[in-house]
Length: 56
Image 1 (cartoon, one colour):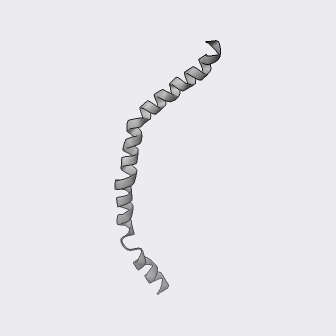
Image 2: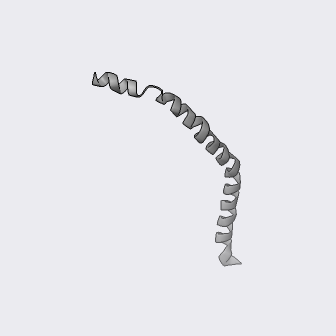
């Protein structure tokens, strides 16, 4: 009976996983894809400044 109670108590949790993916993870990935190129460009500029600064 203990096994039966465990399986019944988890009923419906897979739908919560789908809601988590659709409502949290996908918008976060979309935001990262949108802001990612700008962040990479700023890191590139910062690296160039740090390397070239002693020679200026």
